[in-house]
Length: 342
Image 1: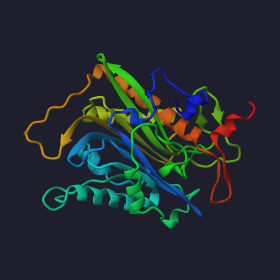
Image 2: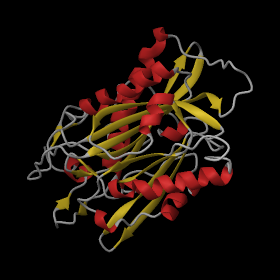
Image 3: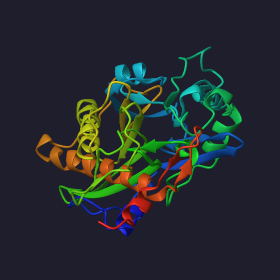
């Protein structure tokens, strides 16, 4: 069901999938590695569009940079070629490099010709700054932690809240982290799924607008909006490159609906991929055929993007427990605020 729905904060008209998570999309896997120690609260989250060799069987994808205050890798080639050829890793700002190394080494182990007899590989790693809770200068995440997240990837329910890359993240003045949601859609009598997974670390305290119209304000925590959110959208709906880019851009409507204005210091990035019609690394034919939904039905996709983005963020907020940050300031849970009398 999801943490938000259990608290009456579900939204939208489209039905969720069985797990209300991105793993409802057939073939998609998610794994976490959490690091909690003295001064450390961080980790890695892995999203695998499928469990096979992504370098050999690439998924079609697009990226939308809503606000570009970020240090991710792999997005330039993703935008140019519209494919993803490694799993997607999420982590903290100073841990992008070991995560990229893990993806490169794993791809080379499966394909020793990479960089020698064939092209190099484009790792995709996105980040948010968890320095308010985690000692980010410790640079605690290693390549082995990234590999552990990849090895832990599985289908079924997704652990959410303070887990993996989300361990040290906050949103709108509340503890946040990893959230996920999904929607089932029917197009031309065929059933499809669209899911979102977010690394939620954005939004100014006091700006959060809940689906019932209430504004959730943790008093005394007003700060500039300077966090980030990474939104991963996965679907089995056949979409072409242009449609994937348009779908990714609608994630911005979801975070705006929650009350964000995409502040100057916020890195807001949406990646959308489809598992339909994967592209071979080397095609046996000079021509490749792909299917795509007719644009007459694209609004269903856009609606699902907005609904899953909003609910994934709410799930991150509702699944996370309050913590004490590095400056001894208490970061409350949204669930604690919801218990307060109106």
